[in-house]
Length: 226
Image 1 (cartoon, rainbow, N blue to C red):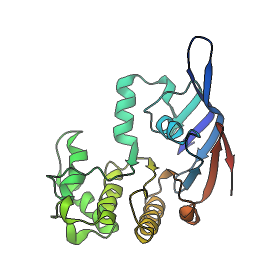
Image 2: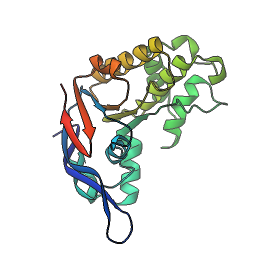
Image 3: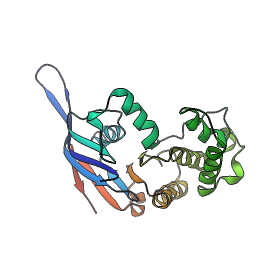
């Protein structure tokens, strides 16, 4: 099955010799291509751990995570690093743009990690920037962009390797209300247009109307809200 699947995933840590701290407890979830799913929950509820496991940055204690039928537990560290580069796009709380690269090069540097940049890569980057409304800004540097524009560059960059899965970690945390709505609306639109499976972790419940489903994590359990 395509998309990203959690099957009975749990995560715990050992705190001392005999104490086990349960962070995630038997979580199951399937996000299909074209879906944007939100995960909400109080601070310390396990949202960050959940997203780190989804992004193959952290290994589950038990259960299985699959991306397009690839079981992450069966991959070597090198294969996991390759999968992260090719099949997962990350949108973080801050845009994390490189100060000395212009908007177009912010996207092309992702391709440079895999080797040589082709003319096709440049065309694809320009298409993405057009899709997020930045076609007139491709030569601008981050210092000349607004906060919302920087986050839109980060959204385009997340799609640059044409990944199967998009993971957004509090993507509106540093934005005012209007820009926050614009950014989440844009993520939802590009996810659907490009048929990606996307998960957004957020504390901002005003943004949930753009999502196909909403789940809450509390005390390690994942429950469907709507």
